[in-house]
Length: 105
Image 1 (cartoon, helix red, strand yellow):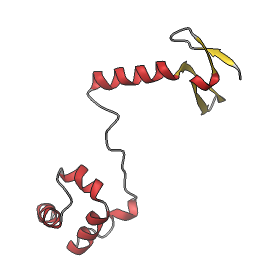
Image 2: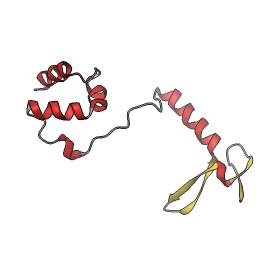
Image 3: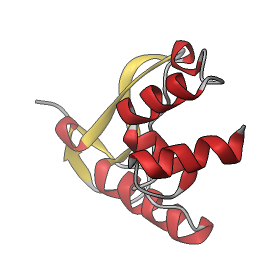
Image 4: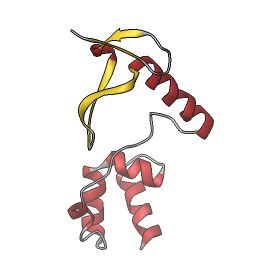
């Protein structure tokens, strides 16, 4: 197991303590150790009012098709309650879905 020095904290650590990197420079390891990278990420999130708990759900483009009809809208939202909550900020119950469709249509 090889070692490398973090360019932020200047500590020598094993390569297991660094994230792997694959980009145009070729395979290798990040110049910051995992601890420094996480600390920097948390600092950024605190400064910019974001968190790691944000929704990263992005439905497939084909799932958007044919939602202009109520039955298709209902079916889509029942199958994707997490998406419904993130867009309409309420639970994906049948009455809420109908109300959301009437508001959108």
